[in-house]
Length: 254
Image (cartoon, rainbow, N blue to C red):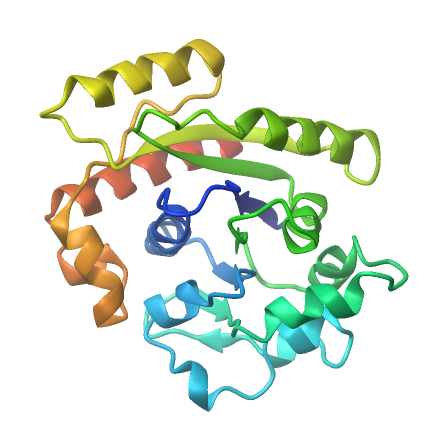
C-alpha cells in the first residue's frame, strides 16, 4: 500500500519544502518509488527539482478541478525512483473556485486513489491552514511537521493539532503525526537547544532524534534545481536529511 506523508506547517519559512524535497530524494535513494505532490501554489518543490514552471501543461490545478487525472501530469525527474506532480501559482485560484464546490475537501484523496506503482507520496502543503492544506491532511496517513528552532516556533502549532483532530473525527480517522523535525538548528546558539527541549516537552513521543542544521549547501541546492544530496552529498544538510529519512522509514515500516 502506498504510504502518504503530508509535510505541513502553517508557518512559512520553516524548511517545509526543503524537507519535502530532501526526504523524497532519500526515500528514492533507498529504493522506494516516490512521488512528490507539489500542493503549494508557490511551486517551490517544482522549481527546486529543476522543472521550468513556464513550460508546463497541466499541473495540480487541473487535477484538483477535475480536468485531468493525476497520472497525466506526473514528471519523472532525473533521479531514479523520484517523480513529481508539479504546481504553479494558478493553484491559488483553485481555492477560490473550489470554495463552494461539492467534495472540495477530498479532491486530493480522490486524485491519489487512482495512483499505482508508488511506495511513498510526499505532499508539500502550503504554509497556511487553507482548503489545500486540509485536502492534504485528508489524503494522507501521516503528517511530518517541520518546526524551526526559533523563539516563536510553537506558535500556531496548537491550531494545526486542532485541525488534525477535526480531520480525524471527520474524513480521515487514520491520520497520525509521524513526527516533528527541528529545522534550521544553529549549534552555536543556546536558543536552538532550548527550542529543541521545548518542542520535546510538547512532542516527547514523536520528535525525531535527527535535527536539520542551518547549512549553506541546503540553502544553495534549490537554485541549482537539485536536492542537497545531489548538490553536495557530504554536506551537513545532506547527512541530516539522510539520517531523518532513515528514521522515517523505521517509524513507518518498523
